Image 1 (cartoon, rainbow, N blue to C red):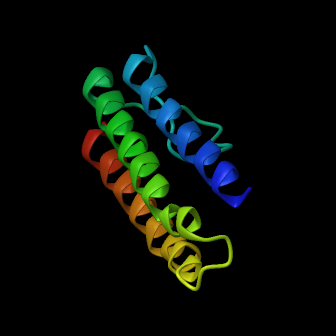
Image 2: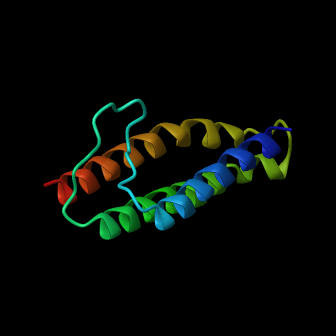
Image 3: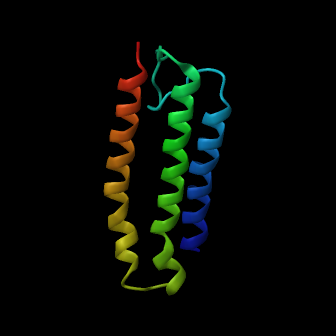
Length: 103
């Protein structure tokens, strides 16, 4: 069951990446951000955000591999503890993209 939930979330991140690639307006990184971000090149910005979310989905999916081995495997702690650096890297990467393309 944990595998299915984890994989569903990874697929959601992948779909968000695909959405970013095809978006016409600049896609915001932060949730509930009221003001729209003004960027120099919307197409390049959305491509960078699409790459961010696509790679985030792939690595999030890889973090769930210990759940495939055995249900109560001691390696599942790797999945749980791996989420913290994953979130930090995604956040820093998103902030870097926003700084690079902001006008």
